Image (cartoon, rainbow, N blue to C red; front, side, top):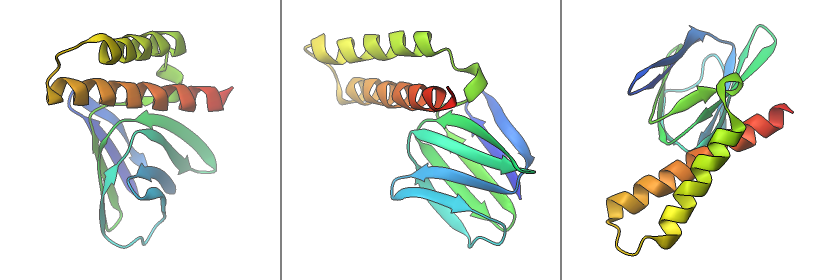
Length: 133
């Protein structure tokens, strides 16, 4: 199967894979060769890619996944390979976003949603990184 993971700035991942586990709004799904066509919402969490007996993890934010034939496309706001996650920087960013959410009095719905997305993605990165230890 061919997998591509794209965020607004770049293509984060592109390769031929054996299977993938994706966090979705209805739980984790495992996509294997021959999977039925699918479009689903991706939730912040861990993507696990299997290729030639090796597993790779990526942290991902909200987005969408599409599976058609042997092609899987994931479009997300953010995604990062586990080896590129700086846990202390992510913890600091999460703390700042949580403080902003708690202390700012007048925020628009968009500002609240943006901070909540930042917090969810930071949590996903921390969980993925700590699983590696």
